[in-house]
Amino acid sequence: MSFRVNWKWCCFALLALWFWPSFAPHDPWKPDESYILGLVYEYTLRDNWLVPMLSGEPFMEKPPLFFWTAAGFSRYVFTWLPVHTAARLAAAFYIALTFIFAALAAGQFAARSRAKDPSQAAWLTAILLAGTLGLVGNGHHILTDSALFASFAIALYAFSVFPQWPLASGLLMGTAWGMAFLTKGLLGPGCLGLAALLLPIVDHPYRKKAYLLTLSIALLAALPWWLIWPWRLWLASPELFHTWFWVNNLGRFLGENNLGPEYEHGFYLKILPWHAFPLILYLPVLFFRHRLDAFKNAAPAALLCLLTYTILSLAKTSMELYAVPAVVAFAVWMGAQASSVPAAFERRFGLVALCLLAISALLVWWAWAALYFGLPLQARLLHFLPGFAEKLNWLGMLSALALTIIVWNLAWRAPQWAKHQGAVRWLAVLVMSYGLVFSLLLPGLNYSKSYKPMMLDLASQLDKTQCLASFGLGEHERGNFHYYTTMRVERFEIGRGKECPQLLIQGSAMPANIGEYSLLKKTTRATDKSEEFSVWRKI
Image 1 (tube, rainbow, N blue to C red):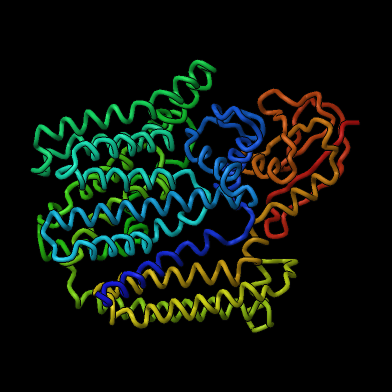
Image 2 (cartoon, one colour):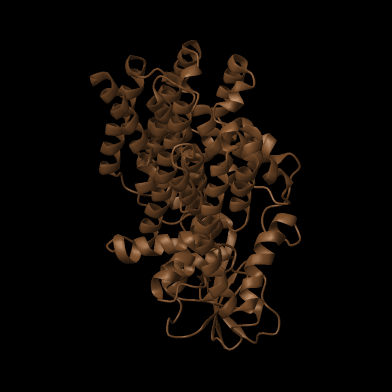
């Protein structure tokens, strides 16, 4: 009994430390945090939460579930924290749900395949998912997609409990469809719904009449999520409903507008080796041992993974973030077969990961020492951080030292308590690397990425009681400017702000036929001279 408690607690410790960067105190960073925070900030300022707004202007790119959650965290739960910190905790909340429900689903699938210890599959799934590069690269930021990840994990758990609890399965499935819809629109529930319809073809337990009842319950459970907000939006403004539903959902998927990243043929196959690492290592190992049975042991997860990658490949926009929900299904698929992973594979993978752990820790500590104590690397680092003069953060240094000792001990002793030492040690690599970077190098990173000093400098030249027009200001910059200065802008691009006595411009172009303005200040960020900002006053 003590052995089980020990190894589970060690896994839990690594998973808890995975969230270390999510609690790191830093400003919102581009590309996504800035404009998402701007939307969340608007919700904290008003009581009507129907229409997402960015700097006082409707912004219909995404449904509002994540914005509601983050604003609720800020207004009602973590009222003493800055809005951006509360929003980051909302993202961490959804990531935690993703880990929990993915692990529960894998445990259920393992139990169905008569595994000796289903809990081993559950813990391995959480460890693999937390260690997947595609998730760890996106999981520590303010992203609406974090709620979509959770919806896929909940849907997989719903599939896994169907044979035992058809009613609960339907309720969970409908909730997952609804969450996916109110997070990103049609793509998420499309993938989940299609997987639910095709599942009886590939897996025998779902060919029962009870499954039809489960799907019916799921549909009823999803309807409130699907209908209430869109119906209220349509009643309030058919134009905004059209912009959201047709332009930002179907139009983006079909490539009928210029929204989103450009389509790249074979994009998801190209990123798969690193984006799904280390899951991609486990796939050939399990396939070699079980052939087609590798697809049957967790058929819903395998189907959802392959289906999501296929549907994404048909879309006319491509972005690595879009593939993370498929990674959630991939982790459940691989983790559910934990007992089949050869010990020799885990030992070799674990040895490589242990070497990488030592190297990554040494590199980050060396970079920190160089930055603050003048080691040879300092000049190269300061080349990317001109003007950086932050004092040494002793609290960050002590917490990083504690993190190094704890994670190294867990990884070094992994063979004594973890059968899957390779997955555990790889997770330790990422926990150590991200944790040290967000402890030791956070001041430099924040100095490089933050817009706060520049925005406050520009605002010091402006009168907050007067209207402010803008030209060329991107959605990220609008969100940042409003959050830091509390000033909303009136965009010339959409025919507003012509009567404003003040003007904020991003770039060097000046709008035509706006009258005479005198320059008050022109500036750039210290680490990015290509982005020029200026403020003007009407003569």
